[in-house]
Length: 313
Image (cartoon, rainbow, N blue to C red; front, side):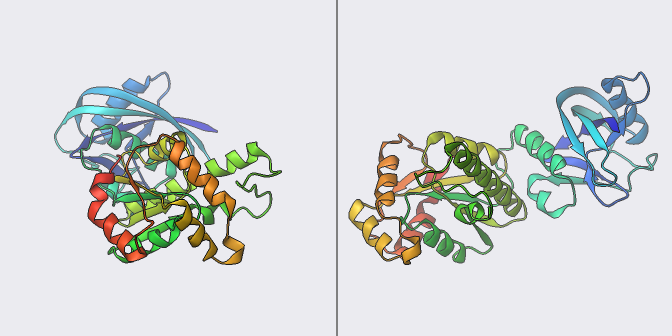
């Protein structure tokens, strides 16, 4: 069964009005369309009769499709951004909801809602033009294998009050059956690309959730192309300030650091091949850091002192 609903986005000061359902979840104030009723007519009726507000102007945002967990009912949700309204919204005449609350992007990790609702709020509040995203900062660290990404990311987290380390290699390793290694070989390149994309999407989802809950996030990954960086930044748009740092030690240092790793983690020629990719990929966003003559602690201190220069979003 499919239900068509209209949802009102009442937003001000970077926050949107949400209503609490009987099951404890939160959503934009919404109501099903009556027979022969247009979405615009349903919006006016809902806000007037149920929220006790008169609206002035509305803008269609998008249609979202979702399936609720309470019975699996499919919902076609038509979202409208309300231009202006008179008098504060009230629930006096609405039995479907028990509470109203103003929520910003930084609150998304603290409320019980669906991923569809989170996506709507990220889209709408991000598009509203907040100059300062409300989530905690997200720093992306990239570079060839053996550049020290994971080590530096972990040490950065220890220097921050609340921080989470999202290591994309570990997300890839969650695939137990059917794993496609990104190292050149007999593997299916289509499957490799699909798993790389999936890992990046899940890394972005983790980063969004941690950031919205107030944890700074350090993502470390081998990001070889501008297109891959574009996709990651798109997935993080409107959430938080984003910083991008590339670690690029010279060939000799890279080989030494690779040799110092556990035997099963050594990459050999692969490290140098990736270093060459970074030098010729033309990506100039953020900051590129030659760590050949820097210790781990010096690298961390330099990043913390210069991170503002690496902001890309």
